Length: 159
Picture (spheres, rainbow, N blue to C red):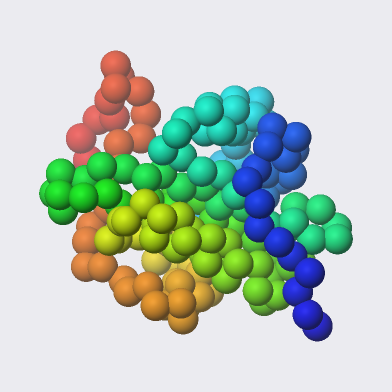
C-alpha cells in the first residue's frame, strides 16, 4: 500500500489531533495523559518560537503523526543541536512510513540549520521505537538520563 501521507508545519487548528496523539504517546510510555488545554497552550507557544518546529503527518484521514523539535545552541559541542522531544504516530498508522516521513523532515531541518547532532529519547522499555530509530541510523548513546520532576519550590525528598 503506497503512502499518501505528507508532512507539513502544524497550525493551531491541529491542536485536537496533536492532543490525541500526545495521549497515545503518554499511554505507550506509561505517563499520565496531558491536559488538552496544556497541549493547546504549548502548541501556540511553539508555533511562535523561532527555534522550534511542530510538524504533522497528514493523510486522507487527517493527522496521523506529529513531531516537535528544538534547534538549540550547544556550548558543549560549540554548535547547534536538534532535540526531538516528541515524535508519535497514531497506532493504526504505524508501519506505513509515517515515522520515517517525520524523521526525514527532522533531518532536513537539521541540515538547513547546519546542526551536527539530532537527539531524541525513547524509554528503555519502548523496544519498538528504539529498533525503529536504529533502523534509520540513530545510535543509542551511553548516557544516564536524570529528571527533576515536581516543583522547584518544593523538591522531592532524597531517595
